[in-house]
Length: 223
Ligand SMILES: [Zn+2]
Image 1 (cartoon, protein in one colour):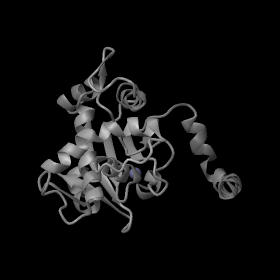
Image 2: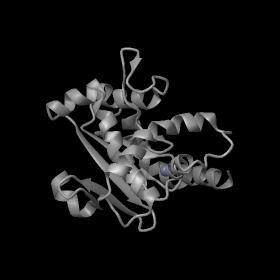
Image 3: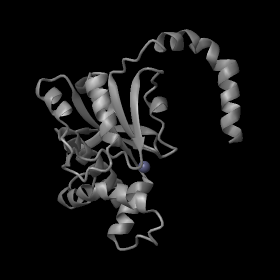
Image 4: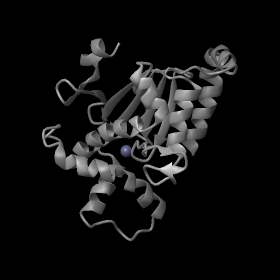
């Protein structure tokens, strides 16, 4: 908490003067052009590695950068009880009209490690029923991992799962009518990114090569 409080003081004294005008403008409304879905992991800092300013990104962060499949008219294609992520998707698409949705996973993800431990029969004492329930949304990713032997074969299994999981979340996003409609007429794009912590490098999935490549190499395709 000490560091947090020192940061608030620093913001107040050093940073705030430069941002006052921007925030005064932002207080009138927001118009971010991207929904960014990332893990809650403390080492993943989207605004830092994407060099974005206040107002640029609508961010959804949760354990394992997960978007459960859409609930349709009260009946769940998933299980219907984890609507928070879906609410953010609908708010960003219908309410804010974002042009892009990026799902960004990362290396050494604790959520993916827990999923793999559970699958190996080493799930612990079940002291975290909510976490267990939330991670059950990764089941499809785990199944997909077995079908994706050519995706980043040199990486540890947990990182391969994390990459496959990102691709799987794009499929989940397509189950949202608001997303599907906008994909059909080109109003929105979906992207799969992955943050390599050790190299502090952002990778992006290239369907052409079926690989995650350094984002800076793909800039031309994405712009
Ligand atoms: Zn994570």
